[in-house]
Image (cartoon, rainbow, N blue to C red; front, side, top):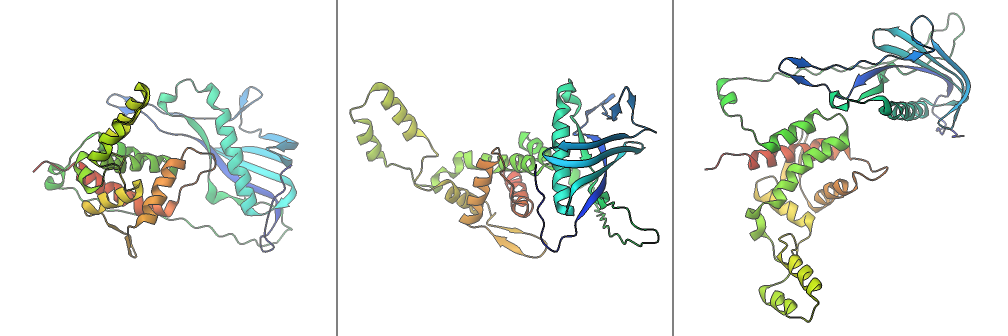
Length: 317
């Protein structure tokens, strides 16, 4: 059984509730066609409605629960109410609910035979998470919740429309903007930087791993046919240079005037540490537990990918 952790300053409770709902990962919209996915909780042959789903004295994901209650709130919303055996903090409860949401979403995958129209997933409406411990009559329990709406004015003009350009890289960058998960955004946007790295026009910036004379001497060595072939492939590899990948990425970005990125409050100069961090995250992105530095994702990689895309898609002079 998992024991919750909390600091001495965290208030503890056994009862919490949070609204949840089913949502699609994406939809398909084409001329004359629109897909939409909708999920409903179903129990004992009927959809949850007047009668909630009530589950007591259970062990779920290694956590002891006195009660788990699912109540339909109308429309696509349900209320998940939890009563834990051991009191826990709001943070520990959030962690448990996220694991429950993830595990339940994955358990639904086997019945989704048409993922082209979007995977159906369960999501928590986090602003509604609260301590639901019953209070004595007359008790006033202040609750603080913050909501933010940002409004942006997007200018459209004849000139801006005529200046639009498109390439397959444009579609990749747009997929990054549509993606909900940070890892997915990172992958899509880093592809734009990888395209920069592969361009022949930047080869002259770097020193080959071996000089022409060194290559000749190496190829004259007594080797088997297979070893000689592998050596030739290595020597012809344009990425085999004396500079490491982070050094090359930094040099290329500076070459196209992307040596710094601007954010709301300051300008961030690029350096080897930032480039190494981006490359390391790209290499580790599929590993279990690997996390994305959200600050670098949004304040560094996002503007870098924009600048790189503008360079790669600019019309020829």
